[in-house]
Amino acid sequence: MAPMALVLALIRSGIFPLAPWDWWKAARAWWRCGSSLAFLLELTAARFPGRPALHDEQGRLSFAQLQQGCLALACGLRAQGFTPGQQVALLARNHRGFVLGLLALSRLGVDVLPLGSDLPEAVMLRILERQKISTLVHDGERSLELPGIRLLDLAEVQAQPAQLPRTSRPGQLVVLTSGSTGISKGIRRRPRLHELLPLLAGLLQGLPLRRHRPLLLAIPLHHGYGLAALALALALAAPLYVRRRYEVGPLLQDAASVEPGLLVSVPTLLLRWLNSETVSRLPAAIITGSAPLEASLCSRLLRQCGPVLYNLYGSSEGGVIALAGPERLTQSPGCVGRPLPGNQVRLDGEGRICVRGPLVLMEETGDLGRWDEHGNLHVLGRADSMIVCGGENVYPHELEEALLKHPQILEAAVVAVPDSEFGQRLVAAVVARQREDFMAWLRQRLERYKLPRELRVVETIPRNPLGKVDRPALLRLFEAG
Image (cartoon, rainbow, N blue to C red; front, side, top):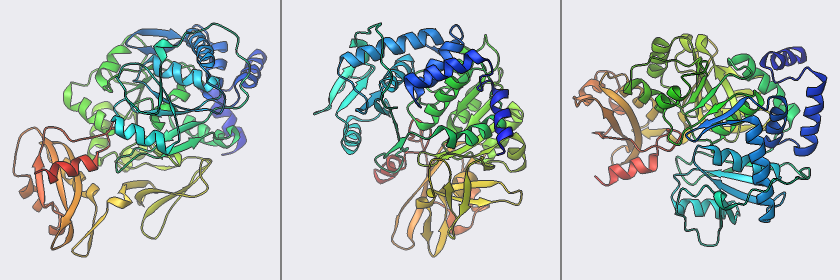
């Protein structure tokens, strides 16, 4: 991206400060906080102290209130012995406790690993041991027993309105992979600002982002996708709407009295929203990602909500990689469009997606992809989920997409199981409005080797908080009979 185009995109968004005193505020915030999330809060609180910053089930906080709470909590944590460079895990639901805890730790220069609030303790302990973390800060909403781990309830930290010295080193964020196929891995994040500017400008050009426009977050804050939305909200001085439960309808109700905002969610939750209620109040834009957007759901969202849909593609390792707006999604339903500025994407000989960008030199994302005739990238699913059945390559994603075209099927998930004759075969679980002969319907639409060995109608499909299918849990469901 040309430097002038980059500057113009930043100016239009309102991120780029124009007034001389704004430059002074930016320099002062940078000197105090360095390149961290705390820098974004300090700068925005100085520029727009009275603007709404966060709305949760406890009410609203302005940027000045958020900054004051962050500094007081940071002083309290420093009194508890927290120091720059220390590694700490953070466990909290989607509310102000998570935001304040993360920003306060960031202000101290602490390296933070955010954890999902629904993680089983045994899994949590294995992650902490792998990351060599011995301290967990939490919101007190769960009773925890983690041998060998220091537990600190945020509510028990005595907030101290004292002066903080400048941060001696910016803290890192350790972002977990989704863990849908095993124990999550931690990816460290401390990118350089000049490397991220083209990517940021590409997002600002491709998405309807602007200063003060509300962001409605129907995904977990602890995930990389949610952390990116939090950073955007701070940079754009935008009010962030969150709820403990990741539901689209209640969030839209919470923001009913303000201008239409940007809804950030995942395909599964968007599908449940469309299926559970009449779509009345619409957001200004719907930004989805983190999981494949089925072509059928994409077309339905465009039909019912209008040209407001944007599909982001990224990974914990590679960051945000590609973006498709309404025009490309109408042209190629379900695609992820084209790489954002600063990213290069190629497919290897087996169709695996490889990316080079500001966060990685060259990294296999683990996904399979294809380019269509319009030059748009499509994600076909995980490379490790492809199976060979009777000598033929079979992709679970293809079967899932075929099932979701049935008018009675609401959700579908497919996994591979051992087969004595073919080596591996697929089994499918569906959530349906009513039972029908789905196998007979599939036989008319798919080759025989692509048909599931078993198709089971279930009440719910096991998923992680981001809506991705928990394939090990689904496999255990079939193994249990």
